Image (tube, rainbow, N blue to C red):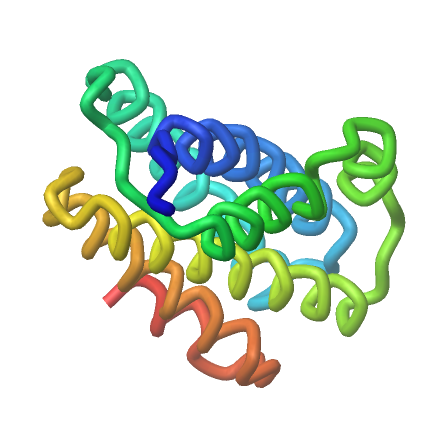
Amino acid sequence: MAIDFNASKLLQVLVRNEARVAELYTNLAHQMEEGKGKKLFEILSEDELKHEKIYSELLKKLSDEGTAQVSEEELEYLDSLIENDMFADSDKAMEKIKGKYTKDEALEIAEKVERDGIMYIYELTRLFPELAPKEMKKILNEERRHLKAVLSRAEIDLVKYLRY
């Protein structure tokens, strides 16, 4: 049996997450010593704020027609993603955002955040392929670059890679 799933659920998560991730990255940038690590988190924060604005605009423009037919299993999966998102619990999210981290810990958190962001974009574009395809492709490519930079963990050329 097909069930309606509203795109606004995922977009609301993305708007919330991009804002919190930007705040997290700003905090991480303040904790890093001057240099490429600090610059990496500053750039990531700027990009996430841009993504938040795009998602917010999409959310405003989304009509009641922003639904997709999904199976019960897909609905359970999507609901589980949303309910278990690392920023779903406000108190725990603020602990993460305001926490003190080593560079390696910061990169581990950034890796999870970027992987989650990519996963949400894939789900959104799979369910709603007509929803701002150019913007979604641009954000997906940026998130992939973010993940690659974070995974490389090498400070050489990280910043250059993000801004080519």
